[in-house]
Amino acid sequence: MSDIIRRDPRAEWIARNRLHPLHAAMQPVQHSWMGPNGIIRKNVHGVGFIGPNGIKRIDRSGAQQGGAAKRTAALEVQLPLHQVPAPAFYINVVPDMVGGRLSSHDRDLLGLARQLAGSDGAVLAVVFGEHKESAFATAGVDRLLVLDGHEFDGYSPEQRVQGLRAVDNQFNPRHWLLPDSRSGGGELGRRFAASLKERPATRVWQIKGDECIGRAGAGREDLARPLPRLILAAAECADPVSDTRHEVLPVELSTSLARSLPRIEDLGAVAVDPAAIPMAEAEFIFSGGNGVKDWALFHQTAAALGATEGASRVAVDDGFMARDRQVGASGTWVTARVYVAVGISGAIQHLQGIGACDKVVAINLDPGCDMIKRADLSVIGESAAILQALIDAVEAYRNGAKRDAA
Image (cartoon, rainbow, N blue to C red; front, side):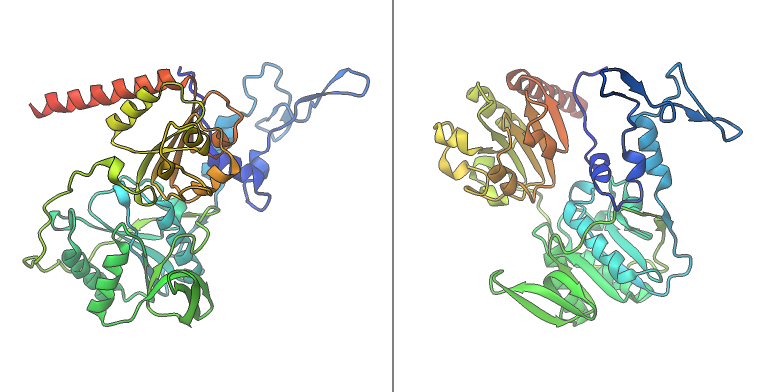
């Protein structure tokens, strides 16, 4: 067994949310406590199990006491299943699916689609190519349409617009929702709107009835307008779905897509020096703090991972990193897909600066620090040993890939 401490942020959030339907199931049961006279008291009603005849039995062996595994199983089983056998209409969503998985922006978009669909409508997610996502059910997807084919690989906006036009003709959705992001959703949504000859609502962050509110004036003003058919939504436009499961029934196009010669050729990704990427635009940030003792090893690990380097204010003040590498409210607010914090305790200004990051990984010696509480994955241990293990793992992976290619 590994001695690395793992956390379940979702289970912890449900345990704090009293309005969640699984809140009671996630509460720890107090089996014993010390009385006012110093004697340990036991709760005989809290320790046990339900027998086959429905009578509560006391488990004196401890073998059948409920633990975290049972609470996790209850989490999967007890979420109510939302079904739409005959949808009155569709709300179509085209998530970015960066890396083949739903991002936090995509989940916010699906939460907004769930609000528009209500109880009679169905949320139809349109995904291009192969994906690695297995949590469509808990993200609010009722129907899933996968447009597979080599023509959708890489940068292929013309082919994707053509596919969306075919979906629009078959399902005639009430609304189209795309993320207004730099990952492709913003451009694809505008191209699709021009193809449909419709004016989309862009940078939408709120919908009230038949009206939507979007950012305007370089983000300093709000623009309200009637709710159009095509919506390009900003991040945090709605709360993601968390209290229901959905069927995720697969659907297919009734007609095959017409083949056409693209006018745009994708020549592949261009290698970019991670150090030259601005902090606000970096997708993978490797950040160091006061807990880093070997900065040469830190730089070597960042180079091996191909990550953009960042730092906390303490590390910058101590002269280990340049001022433009500082992350936080007093430095740069970042929106990375992956943020690795090495030896950073998690001051409030730093946590504010990484609030929009998708996944946070923390490496620290203190299991009770605020960065560990914020992280999606935590590794408790000495940073130097963990960084060296990361370098060895990356080199082993690359050497194995070279042998397979040969």
